[in-house]
Image (cartoon, rainbow, N blue to C red; front, side, top):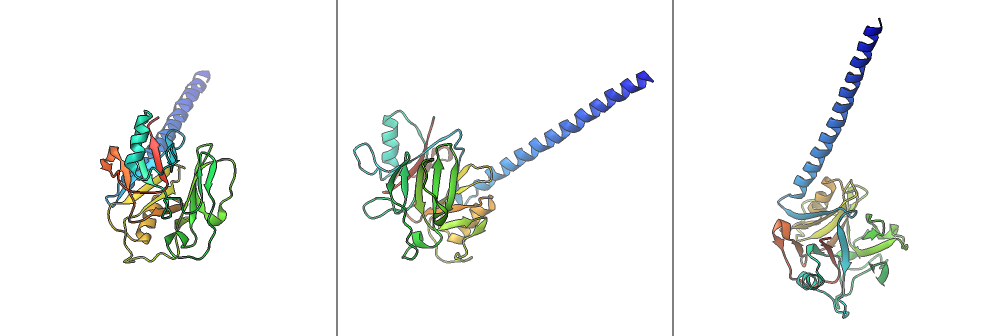
Length: 257
C-alpha cells in the first residue's frame, strides 16, 4: 500500500510538472509570436517605423543648440551629438512649428516649459482639427499620448510636444477622417503600443489621414498623434533610411547609450 502511495505521488508530481511546463511554454510561445507579429506589421512596406522602449533606450526632444539656435535639420543634430561622443540611432521631426521655428503649442524640454499650451478650439490647419493632442514622456520613463483637453501639466513630465490632430482616440480612428480621402501627403506620427512602448512611423509615400491612423490602430495603439506632413523626415540607419535634411522646430531623437 505504501509503495502504491509513493508511486502515485511521484506520478502526480511528474504530471503536475509537465502540465505546468506546457502552460509556461505555451504562454512564452504566444508572447514570442505576438512580438514577432508586431515587428512584421511595423515593417509594413508603406511605412518606416521605429519602436522605443523608454525603460532601456535614451529618447529626448531637441530644439536649440548651446548657442540658442534651432538645430533645424537632422544632420545638424547628428553632427552636434557626435561631437559630444553620442551616436544618433533615430530621429524624426517632432511636431508643427511656426515661421520662426518655434514650436506650435506646448513644448517641454528637460522638465522646463519652453512654450505654452495652445488651447484654441477653432482655427485653420491640421493642428487645430479637434481634438488635437500631446505626446509626453515622464521622469519614470512612461510615454503618453492624450488629447489636449485631457492633459494636466505636472512636475513629473520631462518632455512634451503638442500637435494635431489626434489619429487614434481611445482605440477609435478620428471621427473626422474620411476613408478613401484624396488629401494625400507624406505623414509622420507617434502612438503608444499595448506593451507601453512608443511607436514612431512615417509613410514612405503619400497617404491620407484615415489610412495613416488605421496603421496605428491595427497595431493596438489606443492613442496616436499626428506630428506633421509633407515636410516630414526620419533617420533610422539600421533600416537604411537616412533622411538628414529638413528645417524643423522640435526634433525627437534616440541616442546610443
